[in-house]
Length: 387
Image (tube, rainbow, N blue to C red):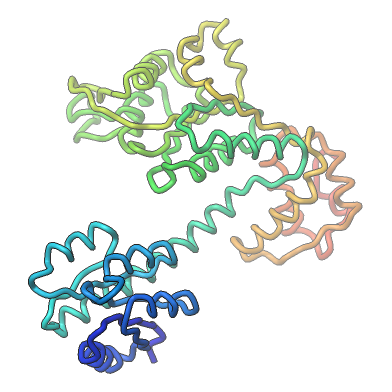
């Protein structure tokens, strides 16, 4: 039995009967409403997978109903229209309707539209689940004063287009801050492109960032878009910006100043709309003094500075982090769920945490693999290298 529910909205009973007969034969669950106001009342109480609505109805018409449904839920709406109302139907598509069907009803056309809308709804549900899982992966865990302040700053800055420089030691979670700046911004539906500047050889960084034209160098066998183009209307995260070559820095500076780039081997300027977030574990002011980082680029990037504190400055967050990682490891790797005793937390707080959050995650995973349940202070002493 198909569990997909469809709401049919039409003031003509004959149309509703035809639609019900067709769709119930395909094993859909059907409910009806003879006007838009009744449809809204039903939608406020029940969840439907698809709404099929006539455009011309007395009182509230289908276009107004579409607008109200969009404010209420994300259910796909298929509009029914007469041949003379095609322009209106096209306008409905522009306003967010999934599809439209003309009268007299073509059964095959109707079923194709319903199945496509059904597939879209399933995809939307799966996307929401995946996004929730991704968001959970990038959670910033902690209730310490430093972390609460950091979260408040992210909330203030995310909605703007201001460039952000994230500073902090290796393993503190700078990439989490970058992800949340993107997720909480108006650009969240567009690309988030991450570039690790330290992991790309200096001779390739310009091609990686700006792309290249075919034949611009030996291995350039075809044209390639760079990360600035791929992140257009989204966010470009330049991790370990302090390791970028001076020549690449000059081109990044131009991109930030003029919002345009040129591919390696190319002559044409390409307009880009990118929010740049950078991160580094280096002291860039010292790098400027050493003439390895451009001062003008530093000031372009450092509109807002967000500092991520090391773990040793937020030891009271360790129990929250450990329990979060334990649940994450259980869910994502299928390892058994473990609990930690109070004396385990005491021992963990004694460690110097040179590798910060990344090191804590690795140690939690190690303890879960090697120890029984619960994990206590003696287990921590036995399986950590510092104690």
